[in-house]
Length: 312
Image (cartoon, rainbow, N blue to C red; front, side, top):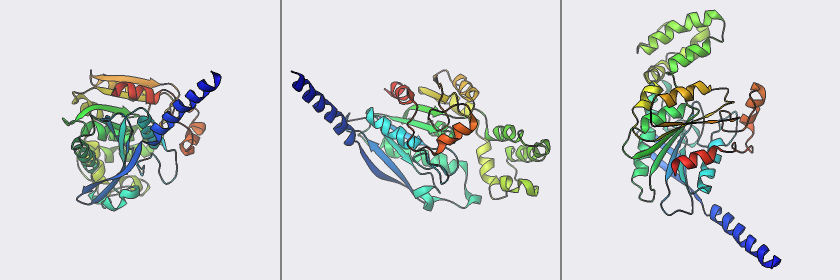
């Protein structure tokens, strides 16, 4: 009897691992006017018609896996793999100009925030044309949260998830961040930010602020500053999940609270001890940042369960 039980357990475990191994990751591309955007689609072996999550990465040179040239944490790759284990498909992609989508990048002076939004909308349309998916869920991380909530104002999107998203317009956030610098920095930068918020470029930029407000990046900032995350979230008429970690040193918990209050359809999930890259981390800044380069550190317990529960 004991041997039979052991054999039965082996078959059960083999079936479990076989099921996961049959999740298929395949390359997928999106054609745009400026070039090809490259992505990865991960499809679980079961169910036959799974929901699919469009995962949108955060700001800067962050690729589809959640990595950048300076740090590798594989957070978004782990998220996709974890969803596949729970029977949920996903599509994640390198933003234009990043990773394998580098050829789709534009000159800095020609890039606008709307390019990222339009790319996300195009991915939604591509997924909507595939009959194998039961519904489309958009998940945006960090800056991808704002991109995702705008792209979710589409009849083909069934649910929206914000992870570590900010609640204020970008200009306001920049002003708050610059307060940490000597007072004269804010005195010089605030008038520039005010002008950009009004849609006006600034010809004269102090040399010490040139890298932040260089003429070639100002058009992008103008396009970005016009969006208020709370206002955009309020436009959604679909179920919304707001996820935020309590040890995120980049985005404070108050952002998640304010976002959840912007739309009565929003559900707030605070995850104790989760940092900005979805990993377990202490509040100590140095120890927290150290996890950003720990590619093998798993996602924090409970994150996938809460996301899956919301989707299903």
